[in-house]
Length: 78
Image (cartoon, rainbow, N blue to C red; front, side, top):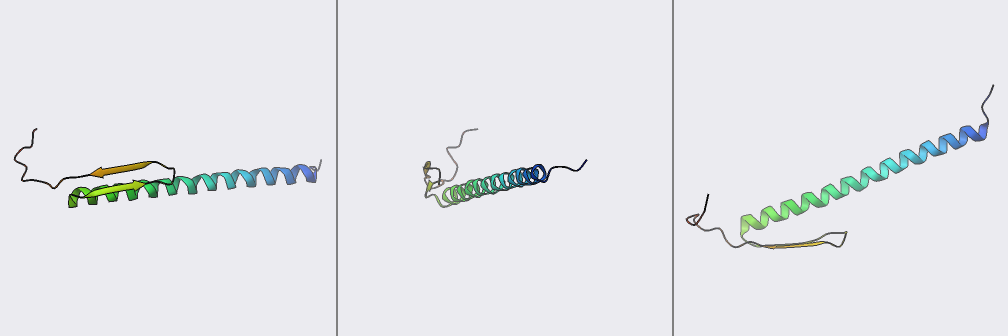
């Protein structure tokens, strides 16, 4: 018994929309990871240089960090 062409078309459309949703979610996750990676690099550079890092993210959050210069390590506790 042949399937109704409308049912087949609807099935193809639904599967296509599912693939599109997965693709968009993957792109969003990749962008979020890129933002996190940039933040880590900026913080590492700020710590190395004894400077400041000011991150403003697309979601509206902000991280501001000030790092004083590294001394000779004489006052380290451990």
